[in-house]
Amino acid sequence: MPYTEENNQKYQEDLKKKIAQLKKEKNAVILVHNYQRPEVQDIADIQGDSLALATAAVKVEAKIIVLCGVHFMAEIAKILNPQKQVLLPVKEAGCPASDMITAKELEAKRKEIPDAACVCYVNSSAVTKAGSDVCCTSANAIKVVRSIPEKKILFVPDKNLGLYVKSQVKDKQVITWRGVCPTHVRVSQEEIIEAKKKYPGAEFIAHPECEQKVLKEAAFIGGTGGMLKYVKSSKTKKFIIGTEQGLIYRLKKENPDKEFYSPGSHFICADMKLTTLGWVAHCLELGVYEIEVAEDIRVKAKKSLDRMLEITYGK
Ligand code: SF4
Image (cartoon, rainbow, N blue to C red; front, side, top):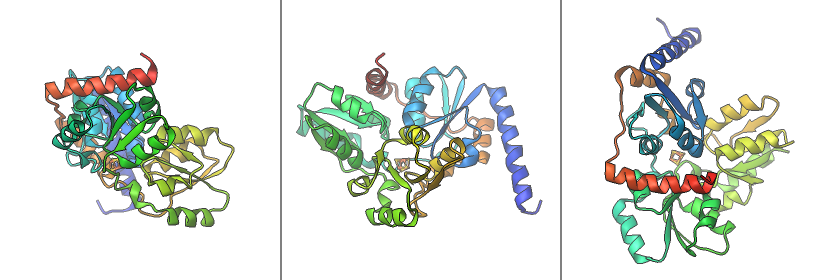
């Protein structure tokens, strides 16, 4: 079949039908992160940010969870659902930011400051979660840090989210680690200033994984779930979106009367874009790639996640 736009469209539609059929046959549910490709967002049973996916993962009844996102997200689903089969469609879809601290480094740092509680961003490996006291997402990081009795907090692995929390929680001593999200730090303050000139009247909203200088330019700072809510309730019609471009697809879908711009053409997470419809179909057909977490690590990591969910939802 020659490549034409029409044939490609038909191929994508056929894949969607195949995925729907396989999902039914295998009793699977598809969880999709907001940064995924548009066509992958379209097949989501549940779509959201890390917090929404973690919360949804606890409630799903299906036998198989297909996580369209990156490795740490599938790990979270497995930690919360050990009895279920959790599949990540692309084995290599990792998160460079989550790998910026090792279990040994965390252990050494904790020994250095034994009176500090350790708060770990969910964008981290299962071993990092296991070595921490409580997890947080970009949506609840401030609430989690405020709720902790200790005055000293070690925040890992994302430095920028840690610094943002520090700027908001003045009565705690927040010690940050050196990890960063390579996607969010790629955008500079100069580019935001340029974008504001190029799109007059547009409001800049930013993810707290961006650098502090970039956050200074923002009218609103929050995770993707917070951005979705903010845009929906705002009277403003134009927005410059300070996060991965995948979110713009959902923003446009939910707000057809508003305009969205990305500051620069490089606000793309390569790992998030690895998942395609073809890989999702392959994953369901063959039952790959199954996520495993060692039981001792899983139990400790679950404690940190449960504590976060308790603080967030008061359960
Ligand atoms: S956007 Fe950044 S934090 Fe999110 S998955 Fe990609 S590299 Fe990791």
